[in-house]
Amino acid sequence: NFHRYQLFNTKSNNLDCSNEQWIVDDCESQSLVGKYIIHWRGEGVKGYSMQFRQLEFTNAYNAILQNDSNFGDGCSSNTITRSSSNINKVPASFQFADATPSVDELDDAFGAMQYIRALNDDSDGDDQNATTNTTSKFISSSSYSLNYSSNLVKAAQRCSLVRHVYKIVAEGDTYKSLAHSAIDQRLLNDLMVENVDDNSTTRSKTSWSMRLRQYNTTDNKGKRFGTSKRSSMSQEKEALNSMSTLLQNFKGPVKLKKPDCPLYVFQGLIPSSSNINNDDDGHIKHELVLSRLIASGRKTSFIAPKTRICYTRTPLCPVAAFIMCNAGRIKDGDNVLDPYAGSCTTLLAATMIADVNSTVGIDIADNTTVNRDDIVKDFQSRSLNVPKSLIVGDCTDLKIRNEAREAINDIPFDVILADPPYGIREAIGGGD
Image (cartoon, rainbow, N blue to C red):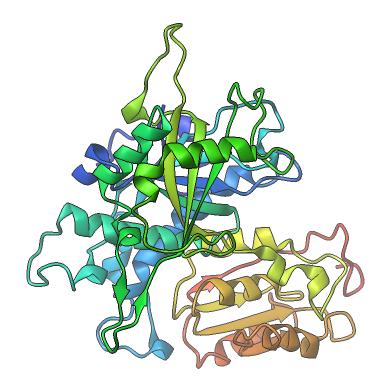
């Protein structure tokens, strides 16, 4: 039921994997340590973005993997280049499997949920040197999982099509068994201790909340959780009371708004492949899953056209801009060019998802159509680094291209993003 997803291939059923070597870490297949759920953003129009979900996330994750090694060898950020060691690395790949049951053709209006597991990952665990032997070439399963989890969070935070990422901490058939499983798994131990500041005797306690989310269950008459369907308060109380064995061990206060640790009980999910059970009639038995929210995706409304000072007739959709940036694997230190910049939606997205070194935009429209001063204000008002240069001219002109390179000291651009005008709605320069 899991399908392999390869970069830049949206038809996973046509993949030829005969020559590929997939690496699966033991901790991913034998425990809950490496089990995660991605909740994708819903679609206002079916089919508008869902085919890019896994592509955007997979490439965002690989951009994270490239970040650290590209700053090696003592190079300054102004002379950063893509190292050959990165080019030769096998990119991380993932398995995705449906977690939410299908209800109808509008299922994705509220966003589907999928299990995710790494097939191979060249993470070297450097972030975990404090807990591992730094002289060893081998990474323990626990260290690998911690680094993998950290990279998942970073990747999700730069994706426009990710709503949330959850880490599974327990699975069970009843609320009571779910509570006992969570205690046994020991993945919520941080909620059961008081944190003491090294410089004082102050004790801080992690705040938490727990909510119930139901999917296609008999209790809610087959309806999916979404904007128009919430779990009843009485059912949430029942769940909390039944899980008191676990909850009474939490030291921190309950905080419904922006808690340190948001917990969710999902009821009615399709079981993951490692834990499929059938009922007496042979149907798949939906399980209870306890998870903690560990990351949220990027909100594209931050650069929505109507919020910007420079507003053009046909601005690029922010979602498309983020997908382009992540598909291009923009990373820290990159120099980015948009030869058809317009109001610079792509460059705004690029500076939001990575600490890019420099951005340059070229557009043939003059300031009466695209006001460069207003574009600069759009960056400044969002505390984003302004482009090195916003050039008026035709990007097919060699002089204009040389001017763009001169803006970054005549070094190559790492990424070129473009949403070319197709001449359908825009006519600048005599209809050319």
